[in-house]
Length: 242
Image (tube, rainbow, N blue to C red; front, side, top):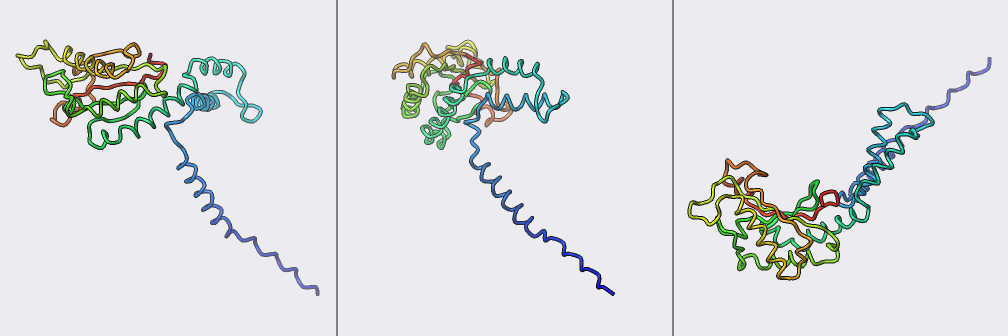
């Protein structure tokens, strides 16, 4: 009687562990390369809207999109800031982080970004005496000179800026020359601009605003919160906020 054929051994799956480790390492590598400050705003909007369309409409022919929605997408892309502007703002942020490293370390300024653009915040207690709009030049001269150098740089050509003055909710002193925090916040912003203009910054590229205590970033219930709310924001405006 013929012997029964021996069943072939099942293929080994040991390779799957090595493959999974390799994929994970590659993912970590590309995450490290990713720099959110240089993201292409136009490409991001395209991807986001494409995904939304796939969720809301039937998809035929693989992952193709309907012609009608694509034509609308083209109109939306044309209204977004240009790639050149977005790239320029990314370079400006890198330059600011490098140039103002001593000031950030000493807690004189902070550098952030939001929907308006790149925001350089001057913490007012370093730049002004309490209730005063006169710049404390002796303590902040180096920082102000670096600011003027930054705004005269090639990365800042053809850009627009806004200087915003802010206070906490403490009323001005009765003997102050300022009737309220509105005048105090506005004058501080104006004086920062005048100082920068003395060192060659073009005033015509700037606008001024004073918000008193109406745009607090932290609670005014604590001394630390009030200190952070007393600030002057210098904003490199995104194209949509000119």
